[in-house]
Length: 315
Image 1 (tube, rainbow, N blue to C red):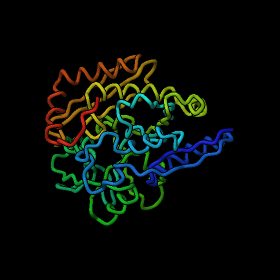
Image 2: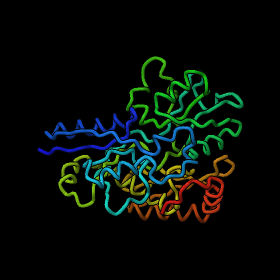
Image 3: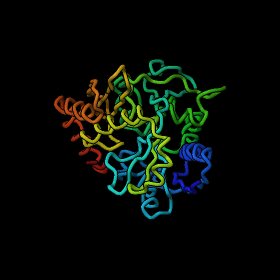
Image 4: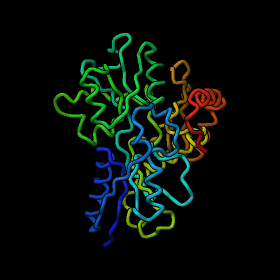
């Protein structure tokens, strides 16, 4: 049996994810250690994510440890992984997806529609902000950083009327059930299109590490991988990073893959949505991106990049 070192961020959610993978590997008889690595995104907590502007802000330092041989594999939230990996790395496994939707969380209110005029909603995601403002232009969107527990405490203290978090992360930490959990509902993808890769975990390894690849291969979920490949193809074709107002969600319907995607302005004044189906994941992602670009997505994204000058343009 093998001895493997997993690299992970130190947040409660990241450690849950790393321990989840560690448990599955230990069940196969492997000895597993977890090394906590602080990333740029973990160090900068007082600036909105869209303004940080560092490519791979939640993966760069972990990849450095992987490249140096200090760890054998990394466990990431797929939505944090840059669209194009460095040639020396690969995603050896994309695990079966959890709920990809966003969760509406509030102490007082049960739905987005029930929020009063001018209600304060916490999120640091331009994608969420865009779609919230499109539904409710009157809402005041307030930046919200920190780990999930910190965000929940800020909600409980009354700083926000509601916050929006990824349903998968909330569920993994057991914060969506029981008394006083405040998770009211999961927002349908046609109202709030999820982030690319949301709800799925990715296992990154060194490209030529055939031993580790073979050991984690059982974690790869074919259907989820096809969906993620499709979503990331769309994101790459749009030249977008994970912090710009782009959403994509692919799922198997019958014998085909169905892709729902959106691009919008952060203030919600313009939101383009597109849906399409196909067999080849990459082709579907590229074609849907081209349809959005023809409708003006390039103009929207160009404006976003000029306003948020620190946001990196990814290949």
